[in-house]
Structures are given as structure tokens and as C-alpha cells.
Image 1 (cartoon, rainbow, N blue to C red):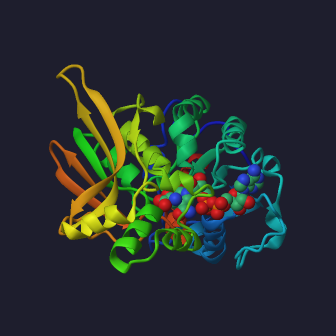
Image 2 (tube, rainbow, N blue to C red):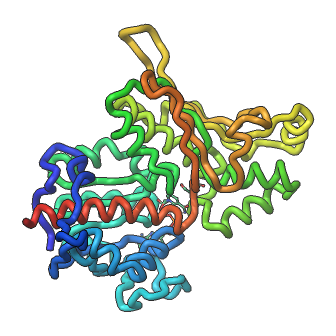
Image 3 (cartoon, protein in one colour):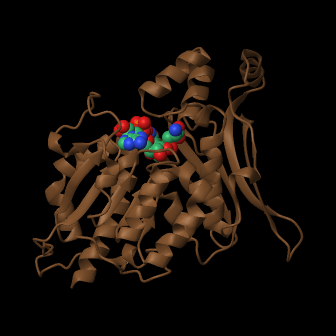
Length: 362
Ligand SMILES: NC(=O)C1=CN([C@@H]2O[C@H](COP(=O)(O)OP(=O)(O)OC[C@H]3O[C@@H](n4cnc5c(N)ncnc54)[C@H](O)[C@@H]3O)[C@@H](O)[C@H]2O)C=CC1
Ligand SMILES: N[C@@H](CC=O)C(=O)O
């Protein structure tokens, strides 16, 4: 059942939650409580279906890691009749009424996408006493500051590692691991579908529109593909990274943005002829006078030398280079899109929040 206070404490993000581990006995086997952590899943598309399948087929492992079973109480979808792979998941869990799920659970996982009703449902869940995991970068880039404030006031967790570069734990790296450093810049490929499209056109000569279709078939594209093709998805991710690095003042309107839809055959031929490749590069950096720094954010197609690590980043893979004063140059790379890949990050957040819930019961 819902709890009123998050164990990380009111006004804090769930940093404390990330340190929780289930109690272990002398043999290293976790004590598993009989009282489940109740979870509602909003969305069963590319990401949500993968999350649901893993919750079913890894139930025992997750129960040991959390210290209690994760009980999926319902899965909200828009169209109950649509075919979807939910192997191992009880069909009776599906509902087309997401509002009916969010009031009586410990953790809500929002993977439906879009601004509304996702925003209203997350607010309702936080007010009703739940922690929230979301992969919804557009919602977070546009309304994340208010949602984080609400989560803080209610004393609940709002986690979103999956929203930025899917499987790669980059939010934790920027927000937590580098909290004692000074980040100078963040630059890289943060959108899997456009990287796949650019790679297929450049290396395999696939016609642009065919490559877009393939990216959709792989589950890489947003429900509205213009978010990918016009750079809006990458813009949302670089906004979230900039906020994590330097604070909450950066918004979508600050992004100097150009997508890949205007690229022509001549652009690809020119790149090939000069030994370069075109990549959609998102960047965030600090400029301005000392004492009055400005944060700049941009997304634009960029010519990259063929031997640069970005040029070697193929298909749906992403790569980000972070420059920090003390750490120097850090390079993170991995799956930037896809159902199972994104579910990995969603489930990581879910398990950490569930551990904190169980620890707070003791
Ligand atoms: N596909 C990917 O590789 C990644 C996706 N994301 C994010 O994860 C979220 C989900 O993405 P996908 O699974 O690809 O989307 P999708 O379009 O495949 O699935 C969306 C699901 O939400 C349900 N849904 C949507 N609106 C609804 C409503 N009003 N009521 C009830 N159900 C509703 C749909 O029925 C569907 O089951 C999005 O915010 C996306 O940006 C994040 C990282 C990677
Ligand atoms: N549409 C997105 C999915 C993951 O965030 C992308 O292509 O990167």
C-alpha cells in the first residue's frame, strides 16, 4: 500500500534510496519479506512490454534484490485489443484506465510518453504517496522542474535514468558520480534512431526513408517520429543533462536546434568525399565571463572525421564525452534506444526505489 513519506526525506531526491540494499543473512542470501512492493505500469509499448516481461521472468531474482516481491498490480494501455508481446504476464492486468492504477501502489512506472495524461498521472501518483519512475524525456524537459519540486514536497522519489541515453547510466554519472567535480562540457550522440538512420545511409547506402522505416521497426523511434528527426528528442536529453550538471535554469527554448530531416544526398556525398561522416551531435557547455557563466545547449548535424570515436558509433549506439576539471575526459557509450535496453534502466530505478521502501519498513 502507499506510504506517505519517501525514506530519502522530504525535499530530497532519492539519493539515499540509491544506497539501500536488502538485508542479507550470513550466507549472503537476502531476507525476502512476504509483503510485496506494489507497482503500476503505465504503457506496454516498446519499453513497457519489455519491463512487464522482465518483471515476470525475473520475479524471484528481483524479490531477492529488493528484499520483497515486486507485485505488478496493473498495466495501462490505450488500446486493449492491440497485439503485444507480454509473454509470462497475466492478461487480466491490462486496463485502459490508467487513473484507476495510480492511487493504491508504492511505485508507478510511466512509459506511456507524451505530456498529458502522463503529467497528471505522475502528479496524482506522487500526491497519493507513490514513488515514480519515468522514461519520458519530453515531459521532464518541459515540466521536470515542477515535477521534481512536487516529488520533493511530497517526500517521494522521481527517477528517470532511462530518459537519457536509454541503457547507459549517464544521469547517475553526471548528477551523482561527478557531484564533486566541475563539468566543463557534455557532447555526443544521444539519439539512437537518428544515429541508426545516418549510419545506414552513409555506410550501407540505404535510402533515407527506408532507414527511417527500419528505425521504427526496431522500436527506436518516438510515437511521433518528428521528435527524433527534428532533433527535439536529442534537445530534451541535452537539457536534462545540462540541468544535472549545472542546475535547473535550462529549458527547451534555450536549445539551438537543427534536425536531420533537411539533409540531402549531396550532404552525404560531400561528407563521404571529404573523409567525414554526419552525426547528430548534442552539446552543452559553459560560456560567458567568470562570475556570470552562461549555459549553452545545441543539437545539430555535424561533420565528424572518420577516425573520431563519434564516427565509429554505429546503428542505435550512443556515445557521450564529458569533460570535467578533475576527472578529465570521460567517455560513455552503449545502447541509446530499444525496448529491452531501455527496460534495463527503468528496472534499475524501480529496484532502487523498491529497496528503499522495504528498508523504510524496518
Ligand atoms: N523506445 C525507446 O527506445 C525509448 C523510449 N523512451 C521513452 O519511453 C516512453 C515509451 O516509449 P515507447 O515504449 O517507445 O512508446 P510506445 O508508443 O511503443 O508505447 C506507449 C504505450 O503507452 C500506452 N499509452 C499511450 N498513451 C496512453 C493513454 N493515454 N492511456 C493509456 N495508455 C497509453 C500505449 O498504449 C503503449 O502501450 C516514451 O516517453 C519514450 O520517449 C525512452 C528511452 C528509449
Ligand atoms: N527515440 C529515441 C528513443 C530513446 O530515447 C531515440 O531514438 O534515441
